[in-house]
Image (cartoon, rainbow, N blue to C red):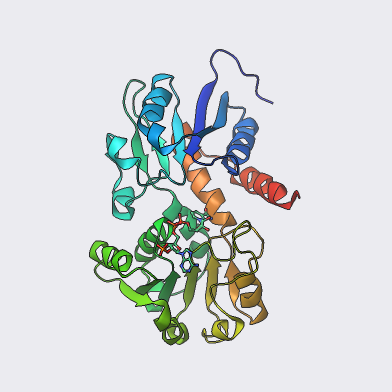
Length: 286
Ligand code: NAP
């Protein structure tokens, strides 16, 4: 255990709520393994306190922050700069400062975290079609990642026409679909990504955005990627594996987005395996 002393540096996560977050356990395990004199703390921040919390955390010298729901978009007007990916996505999940007296700079590591497991697969992405379920903040990171990967066709299935049109304005090549059009999309989908909370523990763990027969409409060899990591597997991924499809859950995305953020704060490589193991252990603990 790192001894906290007068030179200990601070990192943390702001959100509301933050008590459920796995980021503190993941980052503190990595910091201890590196022998770095840092601690990573959860900071519950109500929306109305966001500006004063950001100023206060900068004033006391916090080195870096993760940002979670509901602040990923609301934080942007309070930053001195954001990187190009965060700008395209329209959401920020990581904050850092270039100089100790300066303001916060925003970046987004969710899209790189999402990409990490896909980059290991030998797939001709330019010949593939990705279908993304849901049109919220995580969907924006997934869309950005799919373009970066060079996916041939990217389509989003959502329930709000205004939300879908806003996404198409941001990415004109994006195809937008209603849920009623989903079944027609499935036979041409090679990568299906669930970015809705359907199937998440605490919300609807017995639900899936697709029925078993609908999963059977995907071509053989398709990948089903669920951003949710509790329960493991989700019903969607359990059924995808039952019909012989490749299943990827959100755990690696969580670990990778965190490791990229920590590496940028420390300016060094970080022990990704330590981060992965501690998250897995925590998820297996009842
Ligand atoms: P969000 O901004 O609230 O977006 C959720 C989207 O799902 C919205 O488009 C919403 O539609 C849609 N949706 C919700 N319930 C639905 C339903 N019953 N039927 C159809 N559509 C529904 O949330 P988010 O930040 O994008 O997060 C989404 C999920 O991704 C969460 O489960 C989160 O835990 C997960 N996530 C995982 C990671 C990771 O590292 N693994 C990172 C980020 C997020 P409306 O807009 O119409 O409400």
